Length: 316
Image 1 (cartoon, rainbow, N blue to C red):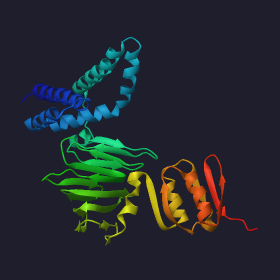
Image 2 (image 1 turned 45 degrees about the horizontal axis):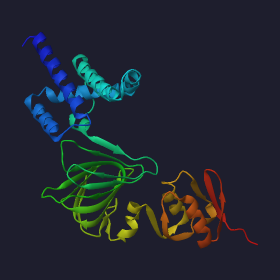
Image 3 (image 1 turned 60 degrees about the horizontal axis):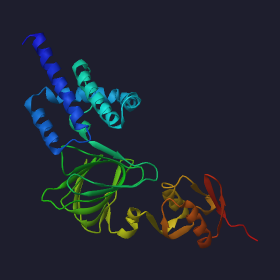
Image 4 (image 1 turned 90 degrees about the vertical axis):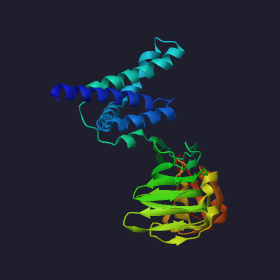
């Protein structure tokens, strides 16, 4: 094949890749579109690398997208304003595909994943493509691969997952861990690369690099150390209802957990940090916790705009 013929094939692959990228990132992308994309990938060994390059180019210049609604909004009516940015994005992707030559740095399947994140103090509940339900705790990030119907990537934070009934297993990738199960109600927490898995109902197999796989059943929890125990599940999963349950917990640890959900910080003095607290408290209500704890423990509170200082109660 001549150099010119090779370049023509590469350009054609890039154009098609850019068209697929535009279609897959559209709000009305359907299961039929995703199947068509999968078929297109299998047609030629050029298509996968071409899609990587198109994706990399789009991600590197994604800030352009912020300008499209502003560019069109001043002159178009409301319906046109909604349609024009989508057409502009598509035109940009297709044009960029023809011109792009730099190699992408991420895989096509990872690029297709739909990423969801929660911010500080935020919780969200989502219905996945297969009918499973996942709830995200504060400051949590997941990705749902578009080309897999029963899979989830937990990147950080804590989730609850209730899988739909199916004969095939559900897979959760979490750093160096892989969690597999067909039917389960599970809590998973990934912090600093360490995973904690709690099974409320059902069972799951947890695999970890360099370690023996562990099978968990109803009521069991796997800790990062490899220890399996059976803690009170109601205490572990109270966050699903927006509450935290403490049982003989140090005041310092309780305040640290509550501070994940409220920008008004609880600051216990070192002299009282080791006091123990038990009870059920509402997330995002540090002022209410501080008021309650002054009745439960020998402490006083000093309420500021951003910080509630907790100190040992003065004598006299």
